[in-house]
Image (tube, rainbow, N blue to C red; front, top):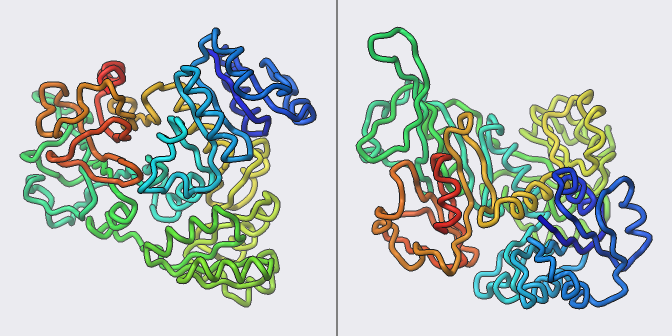
Length: 455
C-alpha cells in the first residue's frame, strides 16, 4: 500500500510511523524543509520538499497508483483543493483534515462531494465527542462513537428489578432514536451444568431477559437516557465545568447545552470570554484563571459532577484536572496531545485522558486500512462487529428500501443508522440507502469481506 501525506506535522509523523511499521510506502510532503526535518527523525518514509505545485507532485506519483491521499495541512481550503486534484487524477481515496466544523455540518451543501473528499476528519468534533462519551456514561469502555460522534453504541446489563424483563422486543417501547443491536446471554448447555455466552442478533419475537448484555445504537441524547430507562441507578450528570475556551471546549459546551446539562466554562482571556458568551447562550462563562487553586476552592469545584480541562496546553490540562481531583471532584478529564507521557499520566490521579492526536490518527488509519469501512469495532471477543460503511455508486443496495434487502443480506446482520448529507436517521424498513450515505451496521465477522464488496 502506498500513501501520500501532505503536511508535515506531529499528527502526520505519528500516522507515517504506524504505516511504515506495517511496511506501507509513505510519501510525506511539505513546502517547509524545516518542518520535514523536525518530524523526520527515524521515519522510514520518503520525504518530498514541495517546490512544485500539488498537482505536479500528484501527477508524478500517479503511476504508482497510491491507495490514499491524506491532506493534513493546517489550511482547510488547501486540503480540499488537494483532494479535488487527486480525484481528478483518479486517486482512489482522499481524506481531508478540516478544522472548520461548518464544512462537516453543512446540510444544504455536500462539501465532500463538491471537493471530491471521500472523508473529512474534524479534530474539534472528534475530540469533543470523545470527551462527552466519558462524561455521559458510567462505564465509557462500553461506549463507541460513529459518524463524527452523531451516533453512539452503548452496552448495558439488564437489571434484575427491571419491570419489562421477559417481554418480547416488539412489545417494548424503547426511547426514540435507539436501535437494539445485539444481545449477549448466558446459556446452560442441555444435559450439562456448564454455561456459555451466546450472541443473538435480535428480532421482534425475541425477549429481553434479566442479566442480558444488550448493545444499543442511537443518537447521543437517546443513549444518554438508557440508564434511567433500565433503572440502573446511575446518577445523571447535571453539571460540568470546562476549563479553556478551545474549539474542543466550544463544541463540547454545545453538546452539553443540547443535553440540558448545566455548563460552566472558565477562560483566562477577557476578549475571548466575551466572544464565548455570545456563541454559548446557555453556558456560564467565567473570565478567570482555571489553574488558580484559591479560585477553584471559592467556586466549590467539588460540587460539579465533572471537570474537563480543554485548553491547548497539556501541562495546564494536567494541572487543572489534578487540582479538581484533589479538591474532591468525582470525575476529571484532560485533553492530552503528547502521547509520549503515558508513564507520567499513569501516576496522576485523573480519571480519563483523551489524546487528540491518537483519536485523529485512529480515525484516519481506520479509513485508509478498511477501504469502504470508515471505522470498525469488535464486540464480544470479535463475535460481532459494528461497521461504519460508505455506500458506493455501484452498490446493488442503493435505491432500494431496507425492507426489500432481505435477499442480499444475512440474518446475523442489522442496519442500525444512516447518515445522509449530515442528517442522521435511525434505520427502519422504509429508509432507502443512497450513494454517498454512511451506514452503521452490526454484523457477524464472517460477512466482513462480503459487505465491503456489497457496499
